[in-house]
Length: 591
Image 1 (cartoon, rainbow, N blue to C red):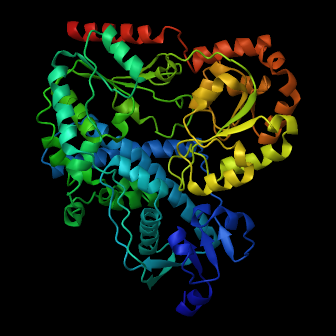
Image 2: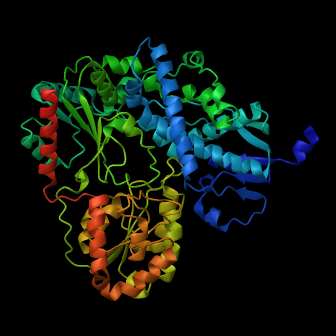
Image 3: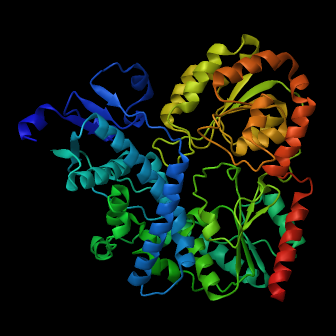
C-alpha cells in the first residue's frame, strides 16, 4: 500500500486513556470503556470513534486453548529457569512458583489479543502514540503483575503496544508510530515496606515455636478464632509465618536485566505453525516474567536458609497465589522430602465450568479441598472454611440486597465483570422495581470495583450505596431477598442464608453439571434468571410473600441438592476439618 493511501485511510488505535487524551486523528478505534470516563462513554455520539465491544465471556474452545497454552508455556519457562539458575528441578517445582502468575498473564494477553483482532476487522492501517518519556518496567512479583494489568494505564499501554509491534513485524498490519513527549510516570505498584526489624522479630519467634508442628496451616485461611481452635484440636502452636512484606523488602533493589532475558530466548516451536498468539508469546513471555523468578530468585532462596521447618502437611488457601517466598519454601521442601501439599478453595468458584484460574492447582497440589463434588482426580469435597461459624439465621427480613460483582478497570480473568456491568444492571433495577421494593433496596460494594463505576453507581442510587465493603455477613440476617449478579461465593453463601435471586446467563457462564444438579433447576424454581428484567419482575411479584415462594417443597429439595453438590455445609465443620488433618498426618507418619 502506498504511504499516501495509508495517511488518508488510517485509524488511531487507543489502548488506554494515555492514547485517548492525545489526539492525532479524528478517526479512532477505542479498545474499551477504560479509555475515558463513564459519562463520556454513555453520551458519546462521535461516529468516527469505533469502540470495541469486548466481552469477558469465554467459549469452551477458548478455554481449552488457554489450558493448552498453560501446559505448553509452563514447561518452556521451567526449562529456561533451570538453565538460567543452573538447576534441575521438576516441572512441579516451577509450576508452584510460576503458574499463579502464568494463568493471569495468559488470560490477560489473550483478551488484549482478541481486542486487537476485533480492531483489525475495522482497519488494518493503524497509528499509535509512542510516549517518549515512558519506559517499560516489568512487575517484581505475581501480586504486582495482577495489580498493574488490572488497573495501570501505563502498564496496559505497553502490553497492547507489544502485540501491535509483533503484528507489524509479521506483516499483519500497517503501523505508524507518532512520537510525543509525555511526562514520565512511575507505575511501580509494590506494596510499601513495613518495619523490617519488627518483621524479623516476629518471624524468628514463630520459627522457634514451630519446630514441633507437623502441619503448617496458612494463618489467614481460617477466621482468627477458628485458626486458634483448629490448632488446639491438632495439639500444636498457631504459627504466623511468611509475611508478604518480605517479598518487597528482598526484591526492592533488584533491577530488571534485559540482556539476561534476551539470552533466554525460547526456541521456535514447529508445532505452532501459523498460530500467531503462540508465536508472539514464545517471543515475549520471558521478557515479561516477574523479577522474582529471574533476577531476584537467588535472593529469595537465600532468605529461606534460616527456615528449618519441614512439616508433614501444608494447608494453603491464599498465599500460594501471591506470596513468592512462601511459594518458594513449598517448592523447596516438596522437592527435598515427603511433604504433602493441600490446597483449600478460598471461594466458591469451583462450580464454574470455565474457571478463571484454568484449574492450575491440580498441577501443584497433592489434594485440593473443594466446596463442590470433585471435578478433578485429586479433589476432595470438604465444608467451606469461609462459612465455619456462620449460623445463617434470619432476624428480620426487610431488605433487597444487591451484591456487586467484582470488576477491574482492564479485563484480566474472563469470569470477572465487564466494565460498568453493575451500573448497567442498576439502571434497569431502579427503573423497574416497584417503589415499595426500591425503598428497601441496599447496594453492597465489592472490594474490587473501579473508581469510575463506583462514581457512576453512587450518582445513580445515592444513599442506597453502602460505603463499606465486606459487610454482607452483617446484612444477610436482615435480607428479605439477596440479588446476585454472578454465580460464585456470594451466591453460594446467600443460598445457605435464605431467599436468593441470581442474574446469570448460563449459556455464557455455565456451571458444572454432574447429573444430580444443574442450572435448569435454578431457573425452573425461579431462583435464577438470564436477564435482570425477568429477575426484577419476579421480585416485584413475590415481595409481599417471599416465604411462600422460598418454602415450596421443590425449593427445599433443590437446596439439599445444592448443599450436596456445590456447597457442603456442615454445622460441625471445624471438627470435620481437624479430624481430616489428623487422619492425613497419621497416614503420612505411617507411610
